[in-house]
Amino acid sequence: MSYFLPESAPVLTAARGLALAHPGIVEVNSAPLYLRARAADPGRRVALVSGGGSGHEPLHTGLLGRGGLDAVCPGEVFASPHNRQIYEASAAVAKSAGVLLIVKNYTGDVINFQIAAERLRHDGIPVATVLVDDDLATDIADSATGRRGTAATVVVEKLLGAAADRGASLQELQELGTRVVAQSRSVAVAARAQTSPTTTAPAFTLEPGVLDYGVGIHGERGIRTIARPSVDDLVRRMTDDLIDALPEGSDEVLALVNGLGATTELELHAVSSLLHDRLAERGLRPAVTIAGTYTAALDMAGFSLTLTRLDEGWVDLWTAPTETPLTLPRTVRPAGTSAAPAAAPAAQAPVPAATAGAAGTAGGRIVLDRYAEVVAQVRDNLTKLDQLVGDGDFGDNLSGGVRRAVRLADETGIEGTAALAEAFLNDVGGTSGPLFGLFFKDLASAEPGDGQAPSVAALAEAAAAASAAIHRVGGARVGDCTLVDALVPAAESLAAAAGGEPTGELAEAPLTTAAQAAIRGALSTASLRPRRGRASYVGDHALGVPDPGALAVALVFTTLAEVHEPTWATRLPAPGHLTTI
Image (cartoon, rainbow, N blue to C red; front, side, top):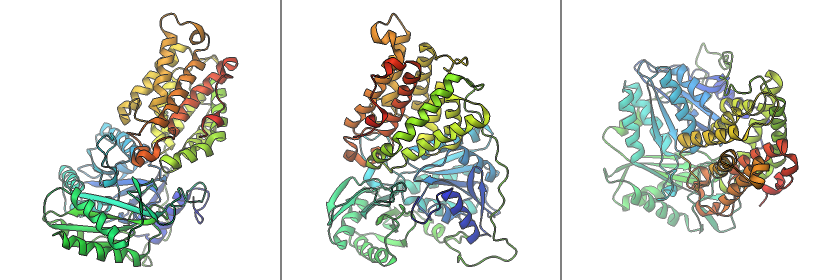
């Protein structure tokens, strides 16, 4: 994923390395992957669980242990963990009064933590959530997504960790976390993009003499590009923007200067000094000042500032003792402990994602194999598109999930969209994992199980059900610039073909017609300003770029048409052409 990460299982390998460095604090569960604290404070009644995409270290894992988190669920680089990781980690560490989930406000994180919370409630485990949404740059009135969760997560986790050790209840912790979030704002700038995990080149290019203002921790472009000012003027501008956005309250603040991966300690401490002076000029007193790399964006050259208005007692929570990788010497190995990570328990069998078609169908396997070919062909194109509107991981996530489905089909006999559903729901993180899993799960119900083409009525019902499920989980509607913009037109086209008395091409080639509708919907996203998903964070930078998820959905319907209506499907654009700007 970078110059010096192993090609195979980089995140798991890094997790094992962290456990080797801190054997008295951290242990690793490998299937599914999560890290847990070896020892919790005996006064703790509620477990704290967090996580997110890798590449932000030491965020989350650095605060694992006493005074911090009970479990951390790392996703792949810049991709959310999947719900199975979160569910099993939470169930493993749950205390007598339940589990509190600390979630950064990114679509994939929110969806996967939400699904895990539903599973925990079903098991009778009390669960609550704190949503961190501190990013000032994405405080946009017409955005349905809301502010991103960024470096204030460090403040939330530290304060809640201390409060949990004092025996706070689930409700008390949720209320404290919600208040800390409400009184925190962050903003970030970058002079150079992070190295792309896929291409090993900068994810985007900045001309000399300019900065991106308002970048995200996944390497998203800023809300604007500005002429590079002096550092003093830059810190003044960032500080003023943050103070103006903070709610009224105490004149005491916590000030966090955070490096994004490639910014030196020298630079960060210089910025902290300038920040301290500007706060004093504005009548605020920094009771706590922290400078260092706590929430990285791989190796982005930039920094963020976070301000939190402090309530009574919060400084005591911040300074409470901890035993975490961030606060213990890395060379210390407590006596009587092993250097090896804890052996992982045997992996549990994944819950079947769909029952329809479980016996396998010839038609379903052909669809799966053809879609695998298509995704392999367009993976790089989808990566390039996603780099323009997000973090560039969509092509890898999609192709990885499809490869898992093919292996599952080879090993178990589950075919077609049923194999895709199981692979994406159980094994693929990020936003695309659960949403595409729901999509494939409903499509699997349309497979007839006899090797024949699915009926138009069954496909129409399945596509409508998938659209409704995705809306319930993620809230997306047509016009939000998401995969729904391709799915809904296809569902409507299939419903029109299944009902009444269709004529012409709609009657003779309903799958091809649905694919054409999905393609039009996907391409229309290029003219939309995104309102949901990670693309919503880059604002006008997304204009002119079709949503990669919508294109992937269109390619599913294109594949169905190619397999079941091969003559008509020749009218459809080639996958490589469709995914190229």
